[in-house]
Length: 260
Image (cartoon, rainbow, N blue to C red; front, side, top):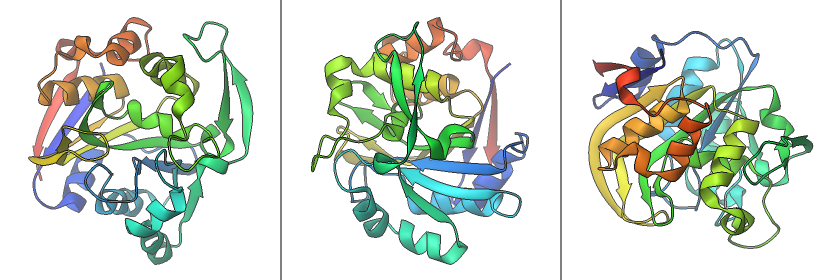
C-alpha cells in the first residue's frame, strides 16, 4: 500500500527528519533533489530551507546533487537568487542545470505523446526526489510533484518558455510520459505556504505542512484535495492512476499524520 506522510509544524528540519523515518534508505549511491525553480524569485518556487533539510538528511550516506532546468529564466540565475548557490557552497554539493545536461534518448512506443525523450544523465540512475511546492496552475489545475518533473526535460535555447513544446503536445500527457521515463522515487510537496492563483505569481496561503510519499500520484492526489480539487478531475493525476504509475484513490493509501 502506498504511503503519504503529512508532517505539520514550524521546524522544517524536524519535519523532514521525522517524516523520512517512515521511508527506507535509497539503494542508489546518488540522490538527486529536483526543486521547482520555475523563475528566479520566491513565492512560486521551492524554498531553499526544505532542500537544505533534505541535503542534511541524505548527505552523510550519499552523494547529493540538486538539479533543475528552469522554464522561465536561466537556471543559474534562479540558483543564485534563491540561495541555492550558497547552499551548495555550505555543504559541498553539486548543482546541475538540467537544461544543458548530457542525455540519452529513451523511447516508449506506448507513450501518450512522447515516444522518445531526452533523459538527462544526471537523473538516470539516481534516487530522484521531486521537491515541489503546493500550488495551483492556470492550465493544469495544480502544480505538484509530477508537474515538477517537466523541469528535468532539456530546455530550448530561448529566454523564457523553455519547455513550450510540451504545451503544444499536451501538458497533461507530457507530464505523465516524463514520469514514466523517470518516476520520482520520493515526492515531497512543501505546503507550509502554498502559492494560489498563478504558477508564476499568485498569493501565499499557509497550510503549515509538508507532504511526503513514495508514490508521486498519491502525493499529488492528497495535495490536489488540499487545494480543493477532486484528484480525478486533474487530468494528469487521473491518467497516471489509470495507467498504473501510482494510485490517486486516497482510500487505498496509508496516510500518516505527524506533528513535528
